[in-house]
Length: 329
Image 1 (tube, rainbow, N blue to C red):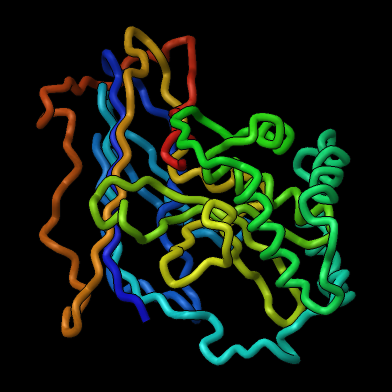
Image 2: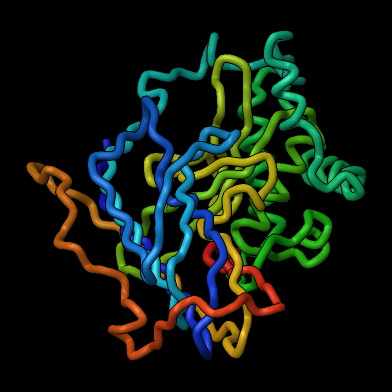
């Protein structure tokens, strides 16, 4: 078992106060038999109303409605978790080996089909041709091994490149460029697995490691595939291996757009987007620590930073998205 605290701090700055539309936050880890939240604290500035819901994928989603204009938006998510292996006693023999090609149970097919359908239909043939090139041989009795090998193929063929731009590259773009961010590589693996008939989805969350321990990490992305008996299994093409204890998932979706950590809009009056900062930091809890979060460290508010808060003004005519895709590398 791995016991961690995770601190995710995101700040957006504008040249003048703006009016924020509703924001959607996918920041709470998905709990289950392999992950338990022991404490959580979410701090947001400026003033707002906060409500929680679950989306169609079962993600916990925070909806934020702001009560005042500001030239800065700060979000600090702090969580303490206990993370364990999903199959601590798994052995490489029946019933854990799944035959290839994958055959799903009839009762699951209506749901599975939505995860087999390509999100980039016009590129599906090109992606399948690429898969045939990088993974010409498939093991007949090991579906999980084939998907893991496909993840290694993406890792070997695509050079990791951190991108601050919003959104994801299409699979064909990533193949053509030969480089991409973690979210680009996860999207390519998702589409490549779907081309082989494997139900796949996009996963967003945190990766505990050297960068996060130093407080200079960002959010992370990988792919999950659904296999009979094994269920949803994660493969991280950025590292070229199956996910492990150090991966903490916050959201899953049929499309990368569904699990952006922070998404929303603002109305541009005199204010325009100036820049953003994202910092993810993790700390391993020592034996005996109860997982209590440290004393609150509220996000730098507009008042504290010398920024200006104003009452709501009449809506400006131009609306722009919060550039939240940049918070996932």
